[in-house]
Length: 384
Image (tube, rainbow, N blue to C red; front, side, top):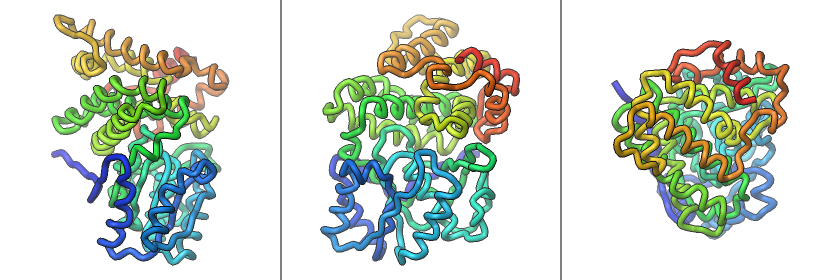
């Protein structure tokens, strides 16, 4: 049996943020609670959304008091602010940080028995849908606007809690590439590789099936064909729009079939060092692909290579595996992604604890090759 959970409504294309007003009116919403980060306010990206709200007479309150890797405390503060605001829907504007924060707020507000936030880790049995949320991504990477996942830092335990809950999915996704045009090169590169990691991991996870495969191969093809152009020239609107769509398509798939140990290993890096999630994924992806080539997923690597633009005519399975890994590494290098953990200030003495944390991550179960703490530590050391 397979299951697909997607947004009730999604909009795509330059300027589609205007649909906030259409959807709010259609659903009878009166006041918005805008969750967005301080940088988007500072650089006037948030203005592109508040102008729509102002022009259509929709009152709103802004919540921006959260970290790049949002914490339990941030969610609790957001719930309190939402309850005081009198808002009846949430508008989440940003990357994974803002949208994940909004998901946590929306779930706890309508399921107060989970107000500790910590009990949401894994697959919590919430009974009510989150506060209706319109999600507008400003990065082309996380796919958070279409997923049933969100990640919150447990400060006390120094760990990233991966929460998986069908009740948290935004009711409306608004993928407007104009909100992404101001992304700097480094962020464009990291978030784009995050999307590629989503696509590749969910393509080779044991839970993958015909529909998710279709989504992920298309996402890989679009990312391979457009990410470098988007990084090299931020004004390349065609590449930006393609990346905006590709990361959503990747999210459609992975949200429904799961991920693997690239994400398991990336999450502790974010918890311990505040490493940007996309950078961690991008750095680790080729190493984990090599490891997972010794799994039943190996025959699918040649399809990854082909989607990456490699001429696979006449290739053996082993050649396809090598070609896929080389193509991913070449793209990563071409856009300036660090290749070793020591380059991003990871400490060698921490590798064992990182491995324990990674093994216990909820994504580990989706890996195509059964693993262990020792295997994961070996991968960290290879990447170090």
